Image 1 (spheres, rainbow, N blue to C red):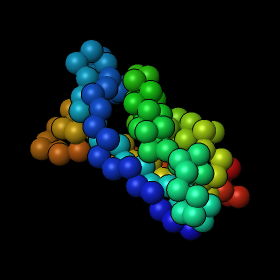
Image 2: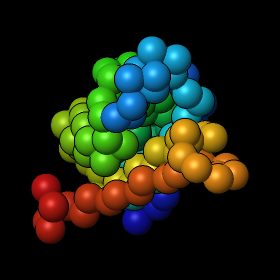
Image 3: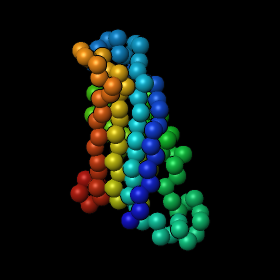
Image 4: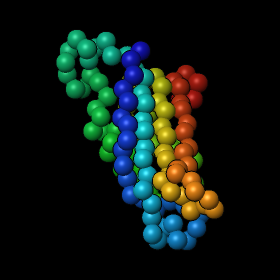
Length: 122
């Protein structure tokens, strides 16, 4: 198995439980780590035999544009959509970081991370 990581996808979105969060929005950073068998693509040098990074970025941007109260919900949607679009994946991990969350204190970010493993979770 090989790993493809699409890291530091920056998005401005409107997630949160507070009314201000859904109006003002926040900066987010999304990371996606995929595992899959690269044997075919490593020999063919053909995009159709691999996981297209552009597609991963598009899924993240699409799902981040749908306002949600909980980051857990956003992460689950991203995971499910990536699995649906890329059946060759054996494992996918997604993290979403909300920068400067509106909580009392000096907090740089809040991160929610989840993982799905083929044969166990899908």
